[in-house]
Structure formats: structure tokens, C-alpha cells
Length: 104
Image (cartoon, rainbow, N blue to C red; front, side, top):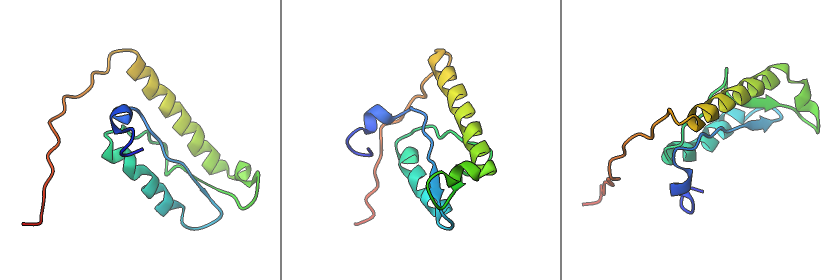
């Protein structure tokens, strides 16, 4: 995604979701968001980290907090998409990309 479609992805709202049994969700969630930041993609947020927990098939449906977080995320994504589609949101002006070479 980062290299093949970077121009197509810029400016499109994105959200990462992590589901896990126990530990590691926060690290996975952070890692999933990194490409969005590098591609100038607005990150849609929720009330907390977009993480849900469950050990086996269907167990995530018992994570009331996780499900509420996902519903809030969906509401925020819908709101952002509607705002962008309204035509009122203008794309920000971008400077040409500057790279720094620290090897001298």
C-alpha cells in the first residue's frame, strides 16, 4: 500500500482495528496505523484504541467495551466521509517532498 498506491491513498480516511486474545493488541494497533501517517491519510479515531478481545470464534461479541469502541469508530468514519463528500472540505496545499540524507 505504501509504495504501490500512495498517491491514490493520500487524503482518504483510514482506521486500524486490532483483535486479540490477550496481550499485544496495543503494539499491533500502533503498527497498523503507521502507514496511514506516512501517506497523509486522516486517521479516524474512537473513544479508545480500536481494539477488541476474544479467544475463539464469536467471543469478541462478548466484549461490550470493544463493541462500543467499534460503533463509535463507525459513527466517526461515517461523519468524516460525509464531511469530505459534502465538498466543504478542501484538500490542504502540500509542499514538495523533501528527503534528508544523513550519510555525508
